[in-house]
Length: 234
Image (cartoon, rainbow, N blue to C red; front, side):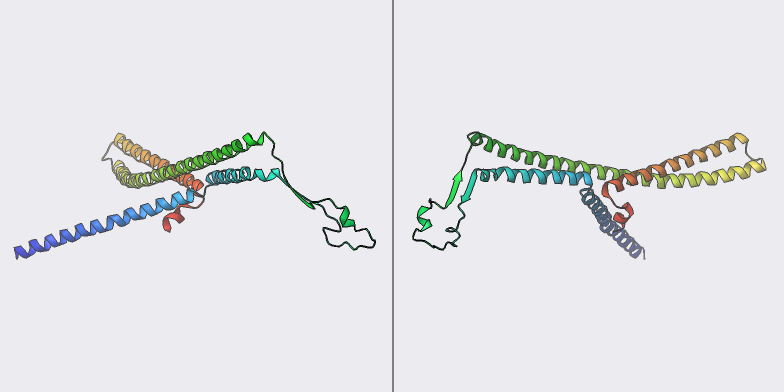
């Protein structure tokens, strides 16, 4: 009988240990999912979009600088009755014998300064793209660190508020007991005042933590652009 009891106890302990090992990763994965969602939403912050637009602008300027050599190519054509093939001779003298050739002209005009300036313009445009890319990455890292830091503050403040609520409830019970004892004369007024002061202090701490929790929640929502509850509930 004793042997069976020991075996049953061991099985229960093993089952509880296995349950703890299997449930803990689920909780961590949930927090990781929430953090990933917060980061992705933070990347849609207008401050990040400005960096994205700046980089797109520099890329467009690089393409523009690389295509500027086309400005040095000129095309021209002689448009007349002959080139348009609408000429009809009405005399013995053919007007086509008086036409100067070629009928179409292609030219390249390259200023000497452009031989040096063109390459420099492209290099400057390419460096601007590199700078915009680096600034974009810096902004993304900063907003990621900011939103995760504030979410950690939110979790810590929420946990502190839970503990403070428990303390406040206990002190409220003690305060009610002190009121009853004061009415019956079983405690001194000093003891009652001490209990009342402790309860009031705990209430003030509770209100401060509620304010801090609301503020950090608003700060997170300012970054991500949606309600925090909606992110956690998904």
